[in-house]
Length: 465
Image 1 (cartoon, rainbow, N blue to C red):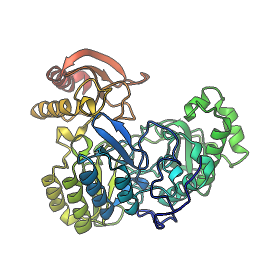
Image 2: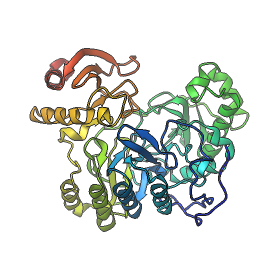
Image 3: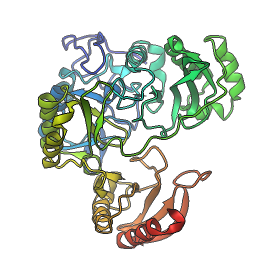
Image 4: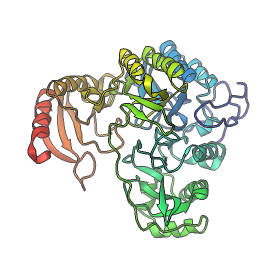
């Protein structure tokens, strides 16, 4: 795809937890000529929804500086309805954007939140653990490799042909890691005969068995080779790795891959799912005396005041950055352990949830019928009602509410999924091994009150203990 190099805006430099990358100049209005048609929003492509335009801001490794967070808050307030969403790929979205698309984009570009090139915006789909570089359990700090991969994705025009949904995951072995989101390519730090390596898999996630491994220094070469082979073999309609592997035998793909990168077998594999509450509350970092604090915006939504407040706390008490997570929450890293309670109190005053005992901190919901034409119910409102009912019953359950079959709020199968069938009414699914999609259908067309009663009874059942 063509890239825009005319360069009216002065040269910008990305600011993030990664070392700074050189940035190709962009035109003042780059979104028209350098972007392909897509239904996926990006920074340079604002997509219309029922409640206005949506702009998706892809964050390097999920990280954003306090100043950048304030720029997002300002843009949401000035050019949109003030709704900011944390996404399930650790990015941010601004919703309800009016007509001033160019001014909004410019403000975010100046803050260093844009791509190196216009055509590179779509392909910045690289997810890390929110604890990359600071997690006590990590085997490998994945940030340097992530920087290298991001530079290649944006700078190599061949990879601009990848789908805006084609995604790569780097897992450094952290305790805090989303291991259930499927990716087209995933790499996970592992041990092979006493040597650290990257195990990897295709069209899956790190809870699956890997197909092979490479030495750590071959991580970048592996990613490049996999992407090259995918683009060489996939037809235009085959936008994801699973589409290609449905027709191309995995062994054949690996044989071709081995011609480009030295591959190794990996016979033993154990990468269990971490406790699901490590993104909530205070947890020790790798460096002695420091903690990160996880805070959950109610149902993944922040307003400008909330984001500005978190940014100010990061500047005052943390390392000056925020990290967003695939659980639609945020981390405030680099906090001195003896000040954690004060920071948590301030975050809760902003409306963020920092307790694992808070039922609302465990629920996720898509935009629903108030902002999406496909939504069959007000999922945000119904989720709030369900959280209140569960809180009264003393239940903190991981529940996903989806307004339609697309499952925009969750890339993985949640333990419990409520699929809207009509306003205020849902089918109830429970995750079950071997069941695709949402899992096994358990009940049909229930009200929120009936759902709360069902979930409470199930949680108290000795059969489910």
